[in-house]
Length: 73
Image (cartoon, rainbow, N blue to C red):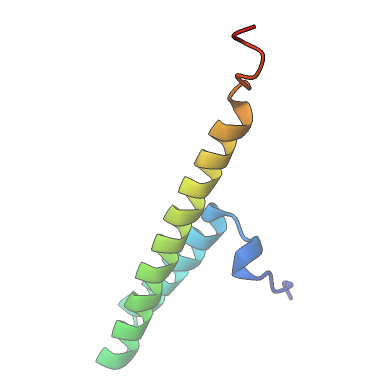
């Protein structure tokens, strides 16, 4: 049994993998309501993964940019 990890602690790749599982489930859904619900989850998880990627990208750019303090001295 795998331990539950909150979404806030998952990587973008993990979130996207979960979206892919929901997409597979939607493809095999027996009712239109189930299909729509799963497709909504897919969209939300993909959007969350994209947000997380953008946040990580902004954070990594900020942390690798050299400080400008003292450069004009």
